[in-house]
Image (tube, rainbow, N blue to C red):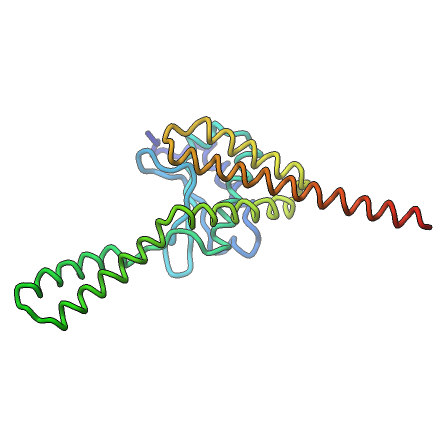
Length: 218
């Protein structure tokens, strides 16, 4: 259960995380403690037309090392930058209205209104499918991991240490996550991160060899 009391240590950590936001985000992205029962470790949601809030479960957060926290935080920042955070949607309301309208029109037998109601259901249902599509959400998470690595280097991490810290964080989440479906997502992200790290290492090695060969000519 999450405590509703925000301690001094909590405030210090929230301020520290706020300082990890890129300057261009600091005026409209808030960092707050999650207060509901059993919240996700970290999540973002729109709280206005021009403001986003990152919510942290500080109880679970404390189980992670500092570098792990940083990279998971930057993953969430990357999701905001990529515009892939969950938004307050109209889909469920539209689906309910459409279904209600369709049932009503069956009684009054108005073909045009029935067609409109079914169309509304179809559009809302398709949007819900898109938002909850597992392949799509995994792809977005992997893209956010890549951008988190870039953000880490922007804040002074070396590329190897950035990969190491995020990989360590994902391994810890795999170990701490009891639900098989969520755990498999972390495992898939970890495998993708390993492939990305291998490519980055090979790229750096090739660049060094090119530099060495060029110097030997002179």
